[in-house]
Structure formats: C-alpha cells, structure tokens
Length: 418
Image (cartoon, rainbow, N blue to C red; front, side, top):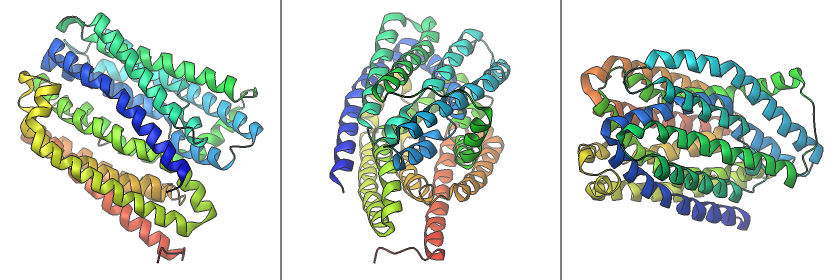
C-alpha cells in the first residue's frame, strides 16, 4: 500500500468515524420522536430524492475523477472539466425536476405530502453543486470527509432545532436537503478559489460529449438504483406504513456500514488504482487483490458483530417500538460483504479497465431480475422477501463482475500477479 493511499484512507476513515457520531445521536432521536410510520415516510422521501439526485450526478464521480487523476497538473484541462460537469448537471436538473414533481404526485398520500415533495426537490438541487469528484480526482479525499462531517453536523443541528414531535417529520427531509445544498455550494465555491478555476463558457456540444462519454457508467449506476433506491419506491405500494418503517430501519444499518467502510476505501482507491493500472497493470492487480482480502475480512467481522449484537443495535438506534427489526437484521448482516466485493470487481475492477459497458449489462440483467421479483413477490413475502431479493441481487452482481473481470484480464493477456 502506498503511503499516499494509506494516508488518504486513514484520514478519510477517521473523519468518517467522527461524522458518524452524529447519526448515533440523530437516528435514535428521529426514530423516537416521529415514530415508526413517519420514519418510514421520511426515509422514503429521501430515497425518492436520492434516486433523482443520482441521475444528476450521472456517474461523474467515477468517470471524471478518473480523467482528472490522469491530468491533475493541467490547470486549463481541469478548469474546463469543472465547468463542463457543472453545465451538464444544470441541464439534467432542468429536465428532471419537472419529472420528479409529476412522478412524486403519484405517491402523494396522508403522510407523503406536497411539502415533503418540495423538500425532496431541494435535496435534488443540491446535487448540481456536488463537486466531490474533483477532490477525489485530485486525491484530496480528506476534504470529502470534512464535507461529510459538516453536512451531518448541520443535519443534526437542524433536526434538533425543528423536530420536536411526530408532526414535525417533514423537517427531517428539509434538514437533509438544506444541509446538502449549503455544504455542496460552499465546497463548489472553495474549489473555484483554491484551484483558481478558469472561466469557460457553456458549449452545448461539449456537454453532450461529456454525457456521451459517461453514459455507460451512468447507465450502470442507474441500473444499480433499480434494486437499491428503487426498492423502496416499489415496495411503498405493497407494504403498510409500519412495514415501510421496518424496512427503512433495517436497511439504515446496512447503509451506515456501506458508507463508513466501503465508501471510505472506495473513494481513496479509485483514482489511485486508475493511475496504477495506467503505469503498471501487474501492480494494479496485486493491489486490488490485497484490498479485496482486507475489505473481505473486515466485512465478515462486521457481519458477525451484527448477528451477535442485533438486539443492542436496534435498542440503541431505534428503541423498543422497532423491536421487529431485530429479526430482520439477520437478513442484511452479510449484505455489506456482497456490496464490498461488487465494488472491488465492478467499480475498482471493470471501471478501471474501461469496461463500463460490461458492468452496465451485468447491472441491467440483475436490475430486471430484482424489479421483477419485487413486483411479483413483495405482496406475498413482505419485508423479509424484499431483503432476500436484495441479497440475491448483490451476490449476482459480485459473481458476474468477478468472472467478467478475470475473463477480460485473460482475453487481453494482461500481466498476471503470479
């Protein structure tokens, strides 16, 4: 492991750990204050916003950070790239926000109201200014960690200030949207000043070229959402508000682990491994397999901790009204492991080999399988069925990405690690 990667990963993980002190206060406070049903609705709203926000991100965190990592000393290049990404995201937002509003009205009910939909749009707008790909490409991921820390600190402050009883649950979504917009905007302005970003006018042709360049990465990200974020959009029509709350709380544990462990390593690894592959494919593969082993052992240990301590986890995070989550945690205990292995062979593997198209076909196949199962089986098997489908989908992605990676490596006669 290079000193730079170790330093970045350590700093990022340390700051992420600090940032997750806030959720350890935030989640118990929210779940106990607004109750099970409204907790499920607030999580549904945030997942709904995340779905559209991810489209605006358009996979640039991978494609543009990879391009930037290879041209980080060229000021004209990275200035031009910075503005083209920004213009592309504005263009996407102008198309998506009306679609979001129209689609959102389909889900409106007694708890999911137009006010919540409006706050969801605020969250989506914040993605226009998301420039964490720039720090990632410059291998300054410590600033991503700092940004995450202040986002969560601001969320915590706003929630504690405005959410006093169950009727205040819309302010949970407002807190997330407002904090994301504030910190993303500050980081966006700071990049312009710190890196002395040169001005470039909007060129429609270049925006379309950028969108075309990242299409298969975006397609893969979009298809991944078919069995992650879209899960909760689909199941809302089949589950009661109480069941929706149980599902959201169960997945929250998996998401915390994913963000804390997998994303910490992934954001540090990606630009460094992309550069390593360009310079020395053998070293790249050796390093990839080393990180795979380390991450695998860590996530298996986490799974065991969840299985042993599930009663404590639920009691601490959610309280006694969420006791049904205890049995459900067994269904997601190894989910972070499967997600982590998918990340190694998909994002850190096929993406870096410029095989985004292969990864998109894998995601398309698994996405169709996942959505079909959800539509056919959710009503019959409930929350447990949804969680089982999620595990099967991640296992399929991991195995297909693993075999695709090794098949491509062999077919191109790239240097092995032996």
